[in-house]
Image (cartoon, rainbow, N blue to C red; front, side, top):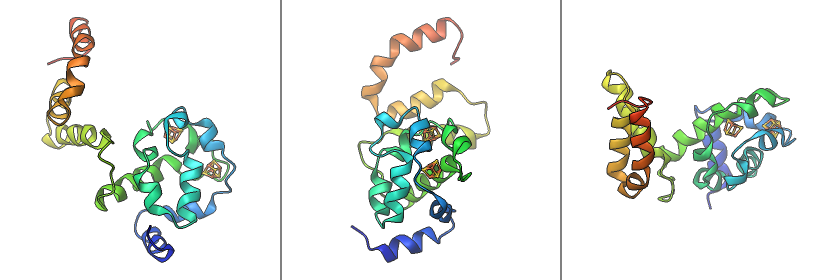
Length: 158
Ligand code: SF4
Ligand code: SF4
């Protein structure tokens, strides 16, 4: 586990994580989060870990990848802490530090999406699914029946 000094120097980096120091640990964010039951730690606990010097534990948790950006936490936080945005910062930090668990697939989905955005072309769900499927072919086959239904109803385009 890293030292507390290392944690503080990272927080002072350009990630805006110093806002975490304003957290009063009320738990409103975790109580509002629709995915909290799937997360290793709710957002409140993630912030507590970071403040206590366990940044690495926070970065390897699934919490930062399971966030679906609903902003319920940010809009309800009594200290107006931008919880969702801080979770994005933690994602960036985890990727830069090579601390993404191999079990976490979301970065590959984000990369497939990012690739589409950077291409400057119209975003295609099918292409995103294709590039994601190259990394996780086992996820593609079970999704075929639903994909065919979506195609039939013109909810996705090739
Ligand atoms: S709602 Fe805000 S103040 Fe309360 S625990 Fe979450 S981040 Fe901290
Ligand atoms: S933005 Fe993310 S962390 Fe916040 S409540 Fe929604 S899913 Fe949970």
